[in-house]
Length: 116
Image (cartoon, rainbow, N blue to C red):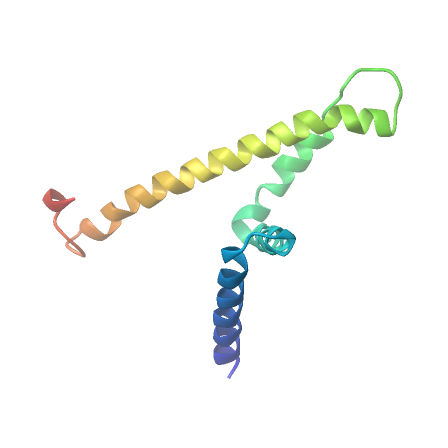
């Protein structure tokens, strides 16, 4: 059954990743990078691709030279954009996790609101 195979793969991957992260190494960095890369392929993250490409593609950094020099000057705004976007999305995630308590309490599905 495909569901069992996928579940077994998920469990074994989680165990391997947990063991790898107990001792931080270059392999740990590679594992985290790969996990982040795979997470960026989710439908929610793919919706940000046009915005990201539009912003980074429109960067016009004045200065002498072209080619590699222009790419180098565009690196800082691109990294700042990606970092800001990451921080904003992380903050939204933290806020959503705190607000998630309310989803179970509204409508009698969880503890009453007075207990929150």
